[in-house]
Length: 120
Image (cartoon, rainbow, N blue to C red; front, side, top):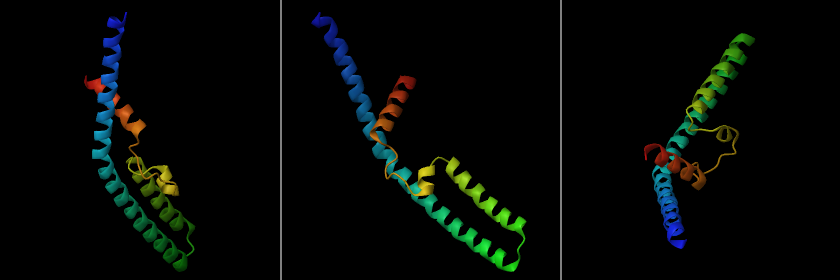
């Protein structure tokens, strides 16, 4: 009985170990790149926010046309939506509850197992 079960247990153990090592390597490669892009996008978003506030107050002091103010606000919302849709910045980042690490062990392990099962 042990001769039949032991190779299967060993095979499953080696497969999960291989996937776990792959997940660690994947996270170590992707995390710095993602962090750099996230920081760049957050800085761009902060600059766009300041420019939008400036445009809003200048328009508010020059005229009281609500349609122009709505257009300024809608332009800002469109930019934020586009940045969020790229997938680098999450909604948690936008409200200030950002995690420091996107590629957590469970996510990288799932991604690695998915890649291994797809590619073979």
